[in-house]
Figure 1: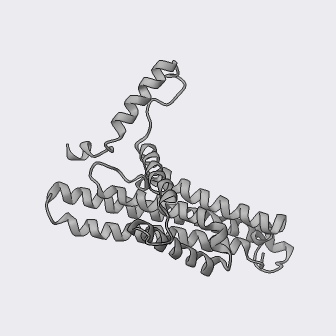
Figure 2: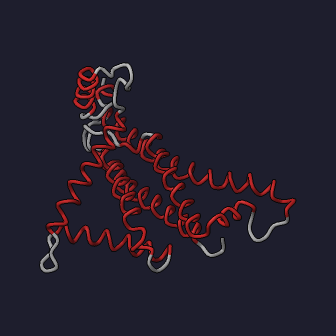
Figure 3: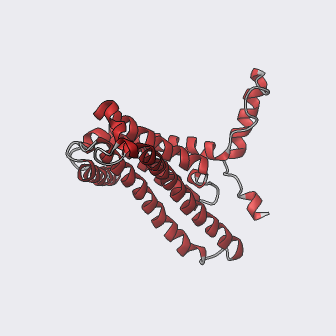
Length: 246
């Protein structure tokens, strides 16, 4: 029973009750999905939390005597900016901070939402993690095309100017390499979050007091590490795509 009770977040029932009422009222029951998946519900919830945190912050910013939340936010932004400038080069933070910051906030909040027993981390769903990884890889390819034009695709023929007879060999190798980036980003995030959340759930079912707490602490550390790995690798892929070697 415990596994069934926590199979969905506390938001799943109310959201789907509202969704069912809307589809019935509009007569679209046959055309629209019968329910909103829990990972979609949680993604919308994380988006709402990020907006609730960031939008009011703009009116609260002060140069003199900043509050603790502003100071924390500035530390996070400075850390991301330094990482981007170091990885992509000077100006990387100015250009890509909104993108990488968006990834970072969404993934971290999604990861830690599993520490609350009434919520489910959206990043334990492969639909979410692979959507994030595919989005990241599409973006860096588009950035490479914008920087180098159609010459960007020369990288798929191998390093340097390879002979024509090697093209049929190098092309599938390079395609598999880039596909492996999508698989690596999505599978690593999914596997770690799903494994940690499952382990904590089992421990809570067996020993509901004290013992799961250290695992939850490790889960918070893992949430940070997995967020950092995702945004760092995305930054590296952007740097490779825009590199003059292409």
